[in-house]
Amino acid sequence: MITPIEKVIDLGDGRSIVIETGKLAKQADGSVVVRMGNTYLLATVVSAKDAKPGTDFMPLSVEYKEKYAAIGRFPGGFLKREARPSDYEILICRLVDRALGLCFLRTTMRIPL
Image (tube, rainbow, N blue to C red):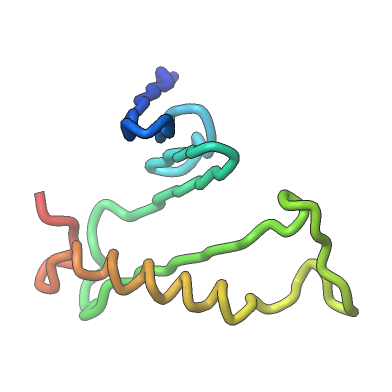
């Protein structure tokens, strides 16, 4: 059983960032909840121990979903649940993908230690 860990970072201006791990997404290889005020972010990671032989790229995927119900809005129209991501959500995914992609070594497709 994973022992939950919580770290509070005080920003000095009355705001604080709370980082929690070990509470949610226990089936993932790693997960963290970052909280600041009423804003919550759940980040999860699932990975294989070794890259597949012959793979010459990093199979990284980023998924960002803005939950409209969390802010009191509900999407209208015909497709409500399985709608394609909005342009804003696609741009956020690309931004995170580009930033994370630089953290991996191109030769080994692994995180540098």
